[in-house]
Image (cartoon, helix red, strand yellow):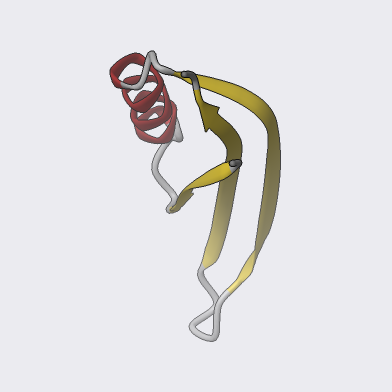
Length: 65
């Protein structure tokens, strides 16, 4: 059975934190096989006129027997 894990981060900060979270999750879940992944990004300006950036990583996986 396929499962999904979603990581999302939106901030003016660097995306190193998102990278760390994904890598830590992969390291602590060695019993999985990644089937596919999708990455989406968006940016814009909020109602207060401040810029934002968002990145979402979706990992599709299955647990190895």
